Amino acid sequence: MRWINSQNITTVHGFSTRHGGVSTGAFSSLNLGGSEDFPEHIAENRTLALADLGIDFQQVSYLNQIHSNRVCRAAIGKQTGDALVTNTSNIAIAVGAADCYPVLFYDEKNRVIGAAHCGWKGTLAMIVKHTIEEMQLLGAEKEQIKVAIGQGISMENYQVSEEVIEQFRAYGFPEYCWQNRQLNLLAANKWVALQAGVTEENIWSMNRCTTEDEFFSYRRDQGKTGRMWGLIMLK
Image (cartoon, rainbow, N blue to C red; front, side, top):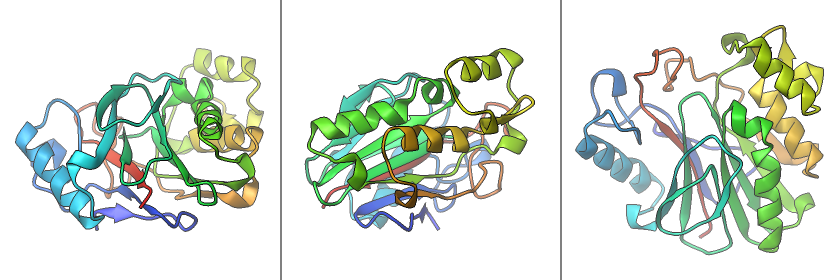
């Protein structure tokens, strides 16, 4: 299975797994990004994965990700930032991940979508909030936005420095977002979405850890691993 779907988004979307591709070794098998795998393998993997969703790579807007809170208006090809938004049909927006959380956004009523890459730095900088605000500039209403949080590293497997925890505390994140030095990025991003005005019933999370065999994990694989995509498109 190449894609896992959320239960609350009804347009074309998915969170990719590591299965069903052509890459070998550490990147086996559906590696959709990074710079260490053979480029022709990444290209073929993208073609295979996108075909499952009825999408051509020439329709994809994706990112050179920099662990920021920069949100880009989608344009075909690659931009620099950590989130994309659009209200244009037939442009697929994609974010990459391999422990960080891919988060998808959908306002069905006003036909606006978003996708965000949420590592600890982007989470701290509240990229989910910035994505929602950029969607509102395109006509979205925060009460209408549905949020789907994909796979990411679980609190149990994500130990960070005391300094990182202190930064989250200083930025006003609630104490339940960590336990000692174990950081809960899922809880933190859900909290940001709620603070931004998304309703609890409009938030879905996969509740899967990237250290599971089905996924790529930067930490588990000690830095040599593939990349997964979170992707959404308005038909």
